[in-house]
Structures are given as structure tokens and as C-alpha cells.
Amino acid sequence: MRIPLLALAVMLLLQSACSTRHEVQMAPVEVKPIHITIDVNVRVQKDLEDFFGDIDKADQNLNPSK
Image 1 (spheres, rainbow, N blue to C red):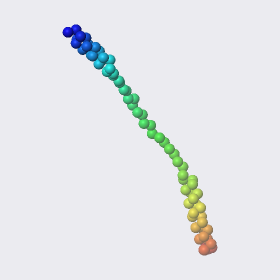
Image 2 (image 1 turned 90 degrees about the horizontal axis):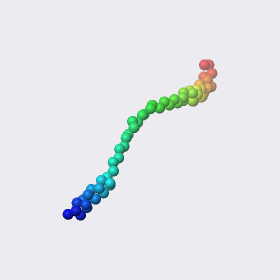
Image 3 (image 1 turned 90 degrees about the vertical axis):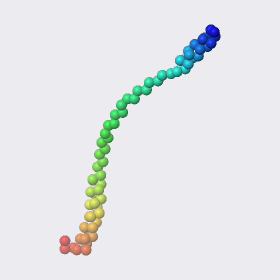
Image 4 (image 1 turned 120 degrees about the vertical axis):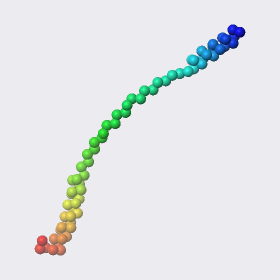
């Protein structure tokens, strides 16, 4: 009668030794805005001046009175 009780006690002890407990904490994620400034106006302006400058030169060659 003692052996089954002892075996039961040993099984309960081993079962409690095999169980683990984990705690995971999640820190709040902070999202910050990203500011990006791209200055493309100078390049576009230069390209437009070159494009229309060629048209103006061609127009002056065709109509020298202007």
C-alpha cells in the first residue's frame, strides 16, 4: 500500500518539476514621423529654361522682328 502512494507522490513531484512558466512583456512601440525634404525645383527649372530657351531661339531665327 505504501508503494502506490510513494509512486503517486513521485509522479506528482516529477510532473510539477516539468512544468514551466514564462512571462513575456511587450514594450510599446513608438513610431516617429520621418521628415524628408527633396529639392528638385532647381533642376526642373533649369531643364524648362533649356527646353523653352531652344524654342525661343528657334522662334527668333524664324521671326527676327521680335
